[in-house]
View 1 (cartoon, rainbow, N blue to C red):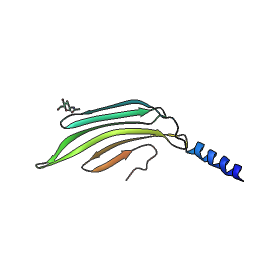
View 2 (view 1 turned 120 degrees about the horizontal axis):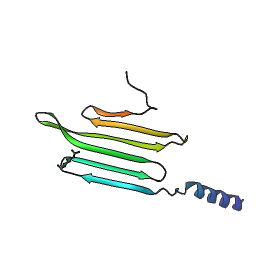
View 3 (view 1 turned 90 degrees about the vertical axis):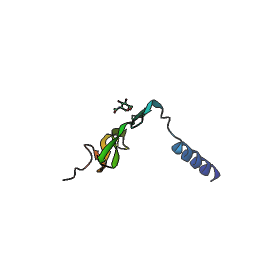
View 4 (view 1 turned 60 degrees about the vertical axis):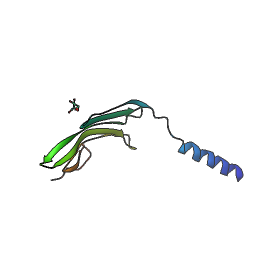
Length: 101
Ligand SMILES: *[C@@H]1O[C@H](CO)[C@@H](O)[C@H](O)[C@H]1NC(C)=O
């Protein structure tokens, strides 16, 4: 019985152990009124975003961010989402996402 518990515990630890995912690229640049950042990891995950300050009225500014991220889902499919986030909200697009009508 004790052996079974120890075996089960070892199995659980093995399952919980993180996989070795490495950062392959990572970059960021922050200027006075714009920025970019990006990264890519060895599991195929990546993200790229650019943002800038935009005037949306006489006394109003908004940060407009554009970018895309990509990852492999648990089903093995690579999902890619590109997006704009501005004064109108977060607007994602991807072939797997429903389109508003
Ligand atoms: C970001 O800001 C810097 C400094 O103001 C400017 O030189 C550069 O052209 C800007 N980049 C973009 C993409 O607007």
